[in-house]
Length: 155
Length: 155
Image (cartoon, rainbow over all chains, first blue to last red; front, top):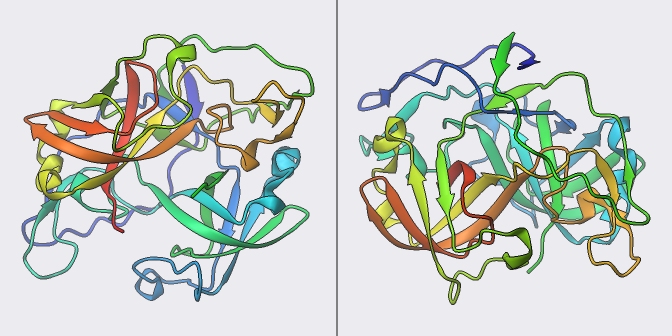
């Protein structure tokens, strides 16, 4: 058994038609946060529904020094896939009403941050790499969001 | 602190030019496996480098009954993004030589399963949903790979 850090505060609001289930009693695998994402958005209501790799504002991936050499060659990747952890999202909803229009759908038919594993994924456009800071356009998340991964995006 | 299950066997081979770093002492977040992926491939060498959503073989996402209602509406999603856990990949390499050609690159400039958080991502084409089984084309992983997430894929 390996310990993990305690979670931070979770948003627990529910809307009409939504349904929660009991979460499993333990986790099956652990994630390391490899850095933080800096964006212009400090409140959830201000975040765009989806990032815009062309016209979106400049955002910065700040990588932990431990992983510095893993950035070798990233400057040559015009597009990157970024995975990040929506650390304020509850994880137990199976039915959601994200649009406030009474239309309830299953979590796996949505891209809402609320899901058993709140891993968000965006394809971004690289602007530049400066040491441990990777500047991109195309993100949609709160300032300070934990970074899980970045990968070359082909095609 | 929350416990997580112990990891299974990890592939620990290294190639010339590759470099490992010390991993953090603890995890920052935990994942639930929400099901398993069934594919035709039972050895790593047999897996394709990338999945083919058009011509690739039929693969099945087998969802844990706990999450059954989260599949509501998935049958209406022609394309899905699938996230899965490359549970045999080592996590400590920052420089890799994946092509055996002496070309060493940083982990974040690659899509290799070997990375701090071995979360793989593929966009697949939906073939059908039958109860807890979601049939798709476009995966590239070993039979039995743990499933982390599926989401509607737009565009």
